[in-house]
Length: 592
Image (tube, rainbow, N blue to C red; front, side, top):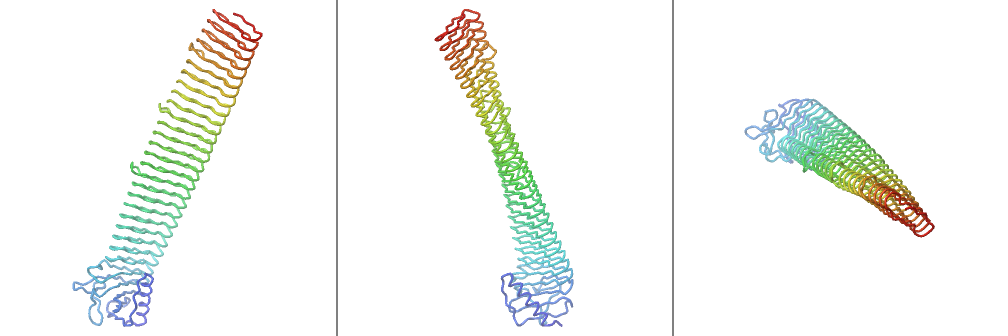
């Protein structure tokens, strides 16, 4: 015979549990007791006033609740009896199951809205032990308690808590809330928009279909979003993520995490640790990847992606699409891949590769290496001693060295190069290039093509090379060689050394201010010493030479030359050929 105080304890416990769930069902003073013929360790109670049916075990009893063909409640296949008669399932509003301290098997798969038409909710507490609980066809509240438990929510919107131990939780159909709590838990959300929390331990969670939310908690967790738009948070530990299809949000937290966003436009954050992050591979997978602190590997895949390496020595791969990449602090490698990419190295020594497409690269602080690759690229070295390359294709690139001693190589195409401050080396390559050395002792080489070069401030070395070039030394004592082609060479300020080139093209040399040396070379050349005490050598060809102001020395060389010393005390020698020479104003020495 069941004792009344035992039932009152269960009634109070059941009422407290319902109050904690914000469902207040008063415990009636009149409680109907079932006949005790079912099992000595199984207890049953029905509260007529609230329609609450409670089954409790003191041990490890199996409890299977269903209905008989006549619509009455059965426990383990036997109709329960109240006051000598069966209990109609239609009178049950709330179902409460308490498992006891043993390994209980609780099966409520025979309970649903059809067999129990008035049933509102189901609450199951497995208690201590390794329990197996199969939920009903409506929304269940399942608690495994201590032990290694298996909880299956079944149909409906279920709430499952594994408790302490390594538990297996399955939500099934419906919008489920699954909490592994302590232990190494395995959680499957199933269909519906599920919320999963692994708690402490090394947990595995798979959301399945629906827009799911999964939190791994502390430990080395594995989280899978499945189809649709999922939110995955690994917490502390070395976690693994698979976003699957849909636009997912993945947060690694502290630890060395591995995350694959899968198809869809995903947001993936590695957090602290050395993380490996991957975006989707399709063209419409526009992903956002953030490495955070640590040495991270970020591969965005297809689509127009945004990548931020954060602190640490990071490797970034943009893949196909128009990508935006930021290296952050650390020695980073950024590879844009195909598409019109934007990459900024940030602090420290970075390596930037634009790949195919019209790319914009900025090295930031540090000694950076940047290669635009194929396409019309814009490359800025910023601070540091940078090495910039426009690419070997015929696209028109723009290279700016910025501060530091930079090396700029434009490659093929009609390129624009600016060395900026520092002692720079600027190479135009193939094409008609525009080059500016800027402040510092610069070396400019035009390569093939009709190039324009200006050394800028300080003492520069300029070589026009092939093509009809226009080169100017700028301020400082410059060495300027037009190279092959009909070149225009200007020394500007300073004591310059100017050379027209060794070919027979007609060059134009202008010394500007300062004591300049002008060597026209072969061809019919024009020389103007400008201000200062200049020396002009015509070389072979019919040359026209003007000394300008100052005490100048002009030597015509072979050919029919015209020489005018201009102002000052000049020395003018016509050399071989039929020459026309004039000393100009001053005390001059003239030899025709």
